[in-house]
Image 1 (tube, rainbow, N blue to C red):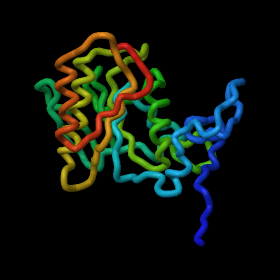
Image 2: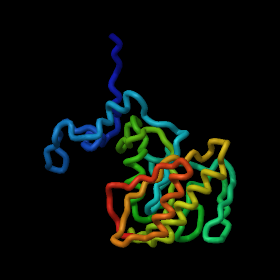
Image 3: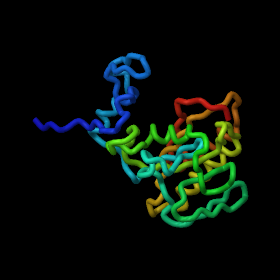
Image 4: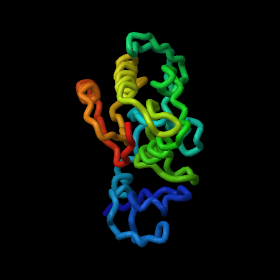
Length: 218
């Protein structure tokens, strides 16, 4: 029989992440239910992620300097241009995504919700600090449309989707922006046909559009 070490990370606060591994531990004075998790440690025995897979975080932005995220932040390998709302946006090499509020290639988080979401998706694992994301290794690209209060407009959300689709196309064939998943931990009460139509864009460009667990008004 072949045996191997179980892939359990050494991150400082991993024991608090009952959603990834629930052993019945006490978190915030609540006793967990052993096994009520996503079986992350079983998955990590197979894979802990890939730098070649880029995940778009459509939210309040990402703190790209965060010590538990910096290693997994996508950086543009070369200058590129996209056309958003009829305007050409020129993004320099080394930029990390898009801010639809300012029409700039700087999705720095000024609220922190997007940074929290990015950590769930891809905080660097087994680095001895902070937490571990579902993917220890990945590439996170920020797409900011929610402001410092956590509110935003659907037209800006549509622009972030268009940006990510065009960014993937701009680096097609080079592997420089293999955006495969768009995470969306926000929501509103009204149905927007325009947003519904925009959601079809990722699907037609081999991207998975994921509705996050959190709910925010848009």
